Amino acid sequence: MKAYTIVELHNLFKNKELSISEYYQSLFVELEKQNKRLNALVTITKEEALKKISNLSFDPSNMLSAIPVVYKDNYSTEGIRTTASSKILDNYLPIYSATAVNKLEDNNTVIVAKASLDELAMGGTNRSAYTGPVHNPWDTTRISGGSSGGSAAIVASGVVPFALGSDTGDSIRKPAGFCGVVGFKPTWGRISRYGVIPYATSLDHLGAFTRTIEDMSIVIGALSGRDDHDMTSSMKEVPDYYQNLNKDIKGVKIAILKNVYDEVTNQDIIDNMNVVIEKFKELGAIVEFVSMEQQLMKAILPAYVIIANSEAMSNHSCLDGIKFGVREPGDSPDEIMIESRTKGFSSFIKRRFVLGNLALATENQEKMFRKAQKVRRLIVDNLNQIYKEYDIILTPVSGDIAPTLEDASDDRLSEQYLILENHLILGNFAGTPSLTLPSGFSKHMPIGINIMGRLFEEQTVLNVAYALESVLPYRNQYREGSED
Image 1 (spheres, rainbow, N blue to C red):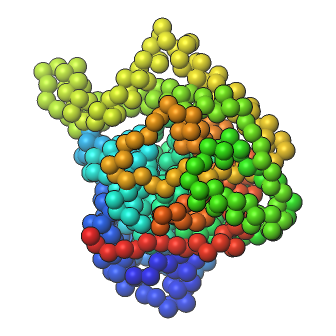
Image 2 (cartoon, rainbow, N blue to C red; image 1 turned 90 degrees about the vertical axis):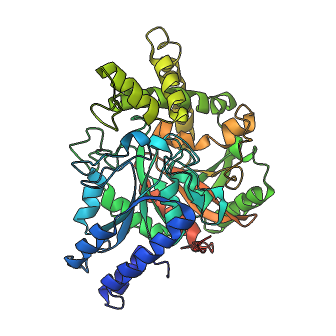
């Protein structure tokens, strides 16, 4: 099955060169086949999709009309199971849909599946999902990345043109890099988070995966805007990102974050970064190396762990088997809650909740949670000093290719790991728009670069990525593979 972009599909439907019903019949055959290979999906919504397209009136003026979409399974979908890849939510049927889902429904998109994630979006490998790990389309012995690994993998397989994800630390951008697709989270508040099962409220962003920048501009434009259900959503006017796409980036100032660049040991990634730098210079951009304070860079992960797990512990206190979730038997409400949470959460999640509870304990709040918030502010202040001089901050997505499923050799205390594998959290701490673009290969696996801009300057980020995409050979790349 050909891997169509949103723009291609729209034109084929518009010109009646492709039957919508025949396309969807082929799509579900391919979706089933790729899911057997990748284990990327929790629920396939074939019946609902075919019912919708049988009554769908195609709108030739709407780029998203009749386009298939996959949602990360923490997006509430009315009447469709939403598990967040956790056993405790295995039977959860929402009675309403997330605002992002409603916005796409209003644009006549067609939901075809819900994608796997790290349990409750808390993780970076997609190995902790209740349904098992997600496999990378380029090499099924490797991870897709997390927590939005299912969404990244299914887009990278070429079956669907886009999928939605969420990003609390790097959960859209790193899977996009590992799977060789475009991943973008706009500014915090640009897209309403209403109806999406949270991880850490002050860090959570919504976003998407596509295989082209054109497609990403269409999707983000449709998702963005004020929502009174989410009082943190922005009232700023949303530009027409698609119509405003521009490859002319002459004079744009790009800062290469030297703290990250210097930690890379994979020579392919170093060479790729150097190629990207030269391409930007040829496009007329001004590219220079800058540094943040090294001590603050090393503090990113510790501050993130405390803030994220504290907020998660608070957000998920409702998952107790009584108000929500699979209920285990017990002789009292306390016993029901203890049994339900004991059996409903993995040991990985329980450890995170214990840490969050520790940091929020009255006697620890000042020296743990409050201190982490102060460190976050110092980091953001340091980052904003760079934005006074530069429009864009550029880094590699990761220090290496996607690790194998069995690989657990990360030394999480090394300076290289602290900085190189956690710097994308900067975009969550500061709430800034951040996009991953495929830029090359290493050992036959995709690698990418990350483009981060100022608050609410999504158009600049998209334009810089659009210009680079036009001079690289990775637009609409995918790995279909075959059933193993």
